[in-house]
Image (cartoon, rainbow, N blue to C red; front, side, top):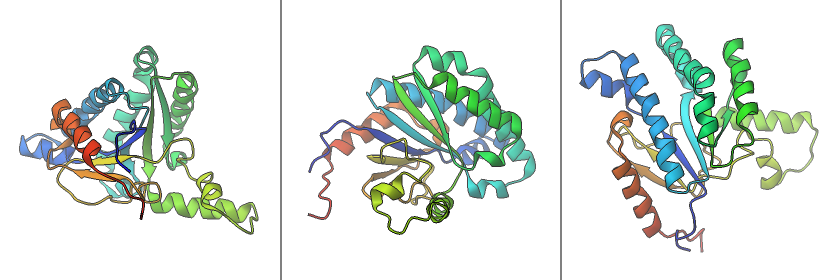
Length: 228
């Protein structure tokens, strides 16, 4: 089976913000800000390419181990997305959904997330899933505990899927990781079973539309056999 079919979903590990800033003798905060601006551009490129679903790794369960000052700055960026981008997202037809341990964030962020999801739920140009305090292992363990709570005696893949935080999105056709690392780092481990993986040394703030289009072309050349 070739990949000529329309791409339904792309996953992105937006890596390299801090190293991008360090290379330029800037604070890591500048790197995170540049990464946020790149995300807004990337959503636009994905819309132009006809991508229906995008899932971005914005904050992992492991990121809680960073310095509190850096976490607080990331909260500032999350608040900017949640409280300042609503009209822009509405105008562009972007539907936003957050996945992960949302209850770990401050109450104002939690409430803002609920409002943003509600206000954009009817938008149809592209679905953007933002992974916040997300970890694939945590997601799977959470699903197992919910299944136990429901006292299910037998579970199929389709039933298990309904307990995942990502139940509302298709599995990613391809996953892009910037920044030079060649691993998934606890991102969509269940959902990526048949995803095509693309790794680039480019730091996320430097990732260009040209490189994105090159990856899409390369994806179309690859062939999936699903074990056959």
